[in-house]
Image (tube, rainbow, N blue to C red; front, side, top):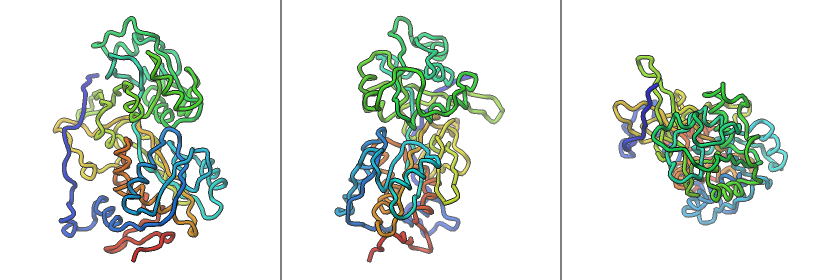
Length: 396
């Protein structure tokens, strides 16, 4: 199987500029429909508390700061994820039990709404100077996560990295948090699909092997002072803590039916966007939208629009992106008498909110998926003007 590295080569302008919207004919592209729904922002004076998973601490503050610059009287305060809050950000795909628990603990009135909020690329982060850019195959990752690969020169790592001298290094030491992590769910979903012969545990949020730490904060603290240590982390956390991030391969079948292995580098934010389209979207019986971890790097048909993502690929570059991306979700208590949670959630999925999240270090939702969230969040497009949520006081 041949292998080559891949990164994007630039950006292009959106398909329709603002000046040309009137020239677009139905059916309008998702980005144009979204722009219509974002022509006004309804300010709601008051403070909303958001419970945030430890891994994503600071993400909602970033969005809240952007909103406060437009609506000075509307503020957001983050709380730990285990504190009952009318709005909650989780780092994984909620299951029915999660939604029921949120409804019982946080929704004294109203009913819960669940939508994806953003993606975040996940990697094998490690503390080993001089080994930046190692390629980790699914088989190598599976061995590391189950504790059978404990040296850097193990053939399952060395064979994929012939240009590195991996001899004489400290032991490879796996570290993991004791609490369920969306990043671990995404990584184990990837190895379960692409290395089933090496990983039989399926998709899990907690690793059975390795040194167990109470919290993500403890994990990162120990990881940064232990040479040879490795862990599953979101890429933004690895970068923020000056840890190396493994590059990951994607298998691509060309037009002739031949399989080619493309190595995707961990520092290309444009390819995170492509990879985030590899999710599967489901809608439950109440209209909640759930996004699975995006694995494999190849967008699912209908979940990615290259023009609205402002990405341009080379003539010989396949449409593949980062192959392991977790999806954060918002759980919102929709109470007409308390409109702040829904109002803030609507801002999170706006282009402005998604832009502030990208600045924070995570990946905005692909436009086709983002537009789908308008339905449960009651952001609708009708004619030339958007209809405000029934739970939101309309602007003058």
